[in-house]
Image 1 (cartoon, helix red, strand yellow):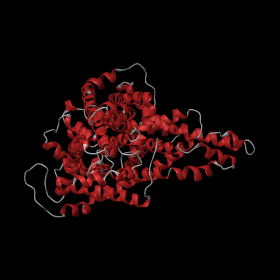
Image 2 (spheres, one colour):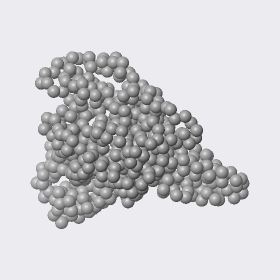
Image 3 (cartoon, rainbow over the protein chains, first blue to last red):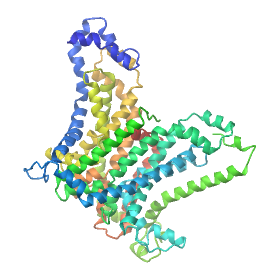
Image 4 (tube, rainbow over the protein chains, first blue to last red):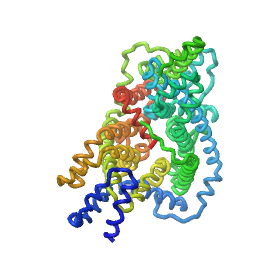
Length: 324
Length: 287
């Protein structure tokens, strides 16, 4: 067995990755001297992978497996007793009226991500040209992404409060200030989605900016010599080169709007119709002790996200996103 | 880059209008970003009376050196404990992530072994599994280890589920020439020595990136400490601030002071490490 491995393997890895000849071939080539070290040599990578794999399996694959299993039971998360109940949990996920509402809430965040991507694209384009205070603007636009989510929650609770920041600003412009921003489901969800735009635009912006700045400058110069307007430069130079990052952002936006948790949980605790899928799942699991049902929710979400990722891979195959 | 060039011949006025509009949009965006934060800062310097007197949120504080709210928030909000806990978690989880990530990258990039493809796939697929969804079942795993409500629960989770750093290390390690390994091997160094003496030191830039983005995301994380450490004395910066909601009720001056204290460390780090942060987060998001 070792013999077939040792004769067959050296050329393959060298061919697959273009690296100047693998050290193995050089080591093995001369003959039997190194032969004896082989068992140890083969064990070495596994020694390095022992801890990482143990953690990966314990905290990613075991939970996913358990989750699948729990989703077919009526377990409450505590008692030793759990009964197999088939697909009942899944039926419940799709028939409970509150689950339907929760899915509609994600449309607010989906719309917000569209706004967010457009704004980020605009500012990334603008700031890729030479401007004064460019780094200052870049820093300001990006900073919200780094702020602690709980702090953002409080900042915006005060922002939307009666007589808070937003009302005060509006009163400057003479608008009435009697609106309870977090009072009705539509208004509350719109406000919260707005917070999400405020928070995450910076990341998209920096991703786009990085992609745009990796375009060689001569392209712009050539375009300018040919008299191309900025819009034409955007359309023919910038847009094609940021496509990979853009498609990545769309995926992040979709899976992000399905798994919104922090902002609505911190700000409204899911009240007034702002509950999201993840908030609902967390409540099933940790407040109502419905581990089985919560697992089914989680499996559904996981399946949707995997599906979206798969579709994206099919639509935009092999596009490497290489930044920095 | 050279925007003045095309403007020479034709329409000189149009670009100027466009430029003005561009700056205007940037200024408006900056105001939208900064105003909510600035107002919270103003509020943190006001007294309870000033907030109640109906002058509106944008009124300036009477006394710019009124730091009483900060003292209240710091003491009654147990922010010192929270800071200690966060520091403890950061120290262990970052060290763990760096060691584990670099070891994985070394093993995957520098060795050929059976099931390598499978192992890579395991790590790759794990990036697709959103952490929020699996917590229902992860909770049971953590609980069965008896780690619930200890600081080791978040430490292990941050260490064990960070695949992004593995990618950052993997990408960087490819750029380190294998001739270095070989030279060391000829001098009789074993694989572990090569990792420790050659690879690890050369990974410094990647380590810096991982430390910064891991540090910021861990500092900001709310979900995991909230779920796994309900005890008040185990609060982190996020969960301690979250607990302001109850006892401080409508005392916005104290809540604001707490929020400012949580934001300032991030601001300081950002100002000093800007370049690394942009690159790091761009890398982290795209891998």
